[in-house]
Image 1 (cartoon, rainbow, N blue to C red):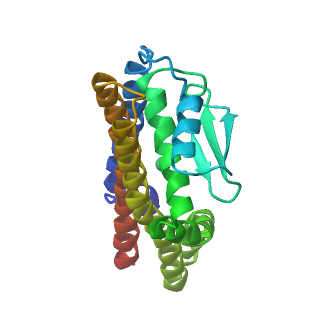
Image 2 (spheres, protein in one colour):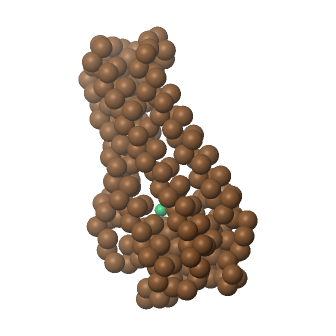
Length: 226
Ligand SMILES: [Zn+2]
C-alpha cells in the first residue's frame, strides 16, 4: 500500500527526527543545569509559591507529579504540578520550569486570551487526533475521497492546537524570565541557565508544530494523488 512507503513518507520521517532531537535536547539541557543548586537554596516549589504570592494568586495549589518533565498547570483544577525532577530541587533548571508553570497560572489569572483560545481548541483537537488516522485509513481502503477529506480536516485540528500553543508557551517563558529577573531568587549566571532550559523547552513546541504541519502536507499530497 503506497500509504505506507510512498515518497511522501519522508515528511513524517523528517518531522519525527526533528521532534526526537528537540526532546533529546530539552532533556540534555535540563540535566546539564540540574546539577547545581542556586546560591540561595530556594527549592522549585518554594520559588513557585513566592512567584504566585507576588502575583496575588492565592487559590492555586502546588502538587508533585510523577514523571520526567511532566510539569504543567491545570487551569480547570487550578493546580500547578511539578515533576519528580523539579519538585524539591534547588537547581536553576528546576526553578526555571517552576517559574514557567507559574507563568501559565498568571496567564489564567489575568485572562490572557491565547490561553483561553487554547483551552477551547483542546477538546476538538483531541477528537481530531483520535479519529483522523482511522478515518483516513478507511478512506484509503475504500477509496473514498470524502473520508480522506474528513480525516485531513480532523488532523488539521491537531495542527491548530499546536499553533495556538506556541504563543501561550512563549509568553509563559517570557513572564517566567521577567519575574525571575525582577525577583532575587536567582543570580545572573543561574538566570542564564534557566533561560537556556526554557528555550530548549520552547523548541519542543516548535518541533511539534513542524511535525504536524509536515504530516498535514503529506495527507494533502496523499489526497491529491487519489
Ligand atoms: Zn508551558
